[in-house]
Length: 109
Image (cartoon, rainbow, N blue to C red; front, side):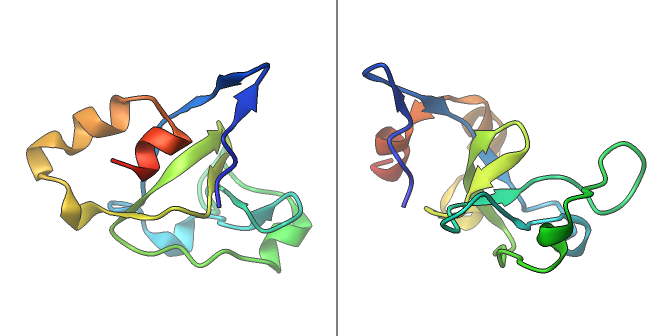
């Protein structure tokens, strides 16, 4: 699961990231850190965004297409929970991705 992200008693506010319009083969998606809780958001194509972490090329998280995940850091996302894009009205998708909520608020959304 997702840790509460609490720091000093204050829950971290997280944004959703969409992999709906991303070619999944172009995203690194290698596991970040230990425990298999986060995946790499860097690209495997193009200049400037290439992931160079060797272990990411071996240990991959399997992303679900047309889904959204919680951003953990600028370069990583949480593996769970997964939010199917189909559950969100298309007109609300962009606004929803701009929102920041705690992990608890997102999982009860």
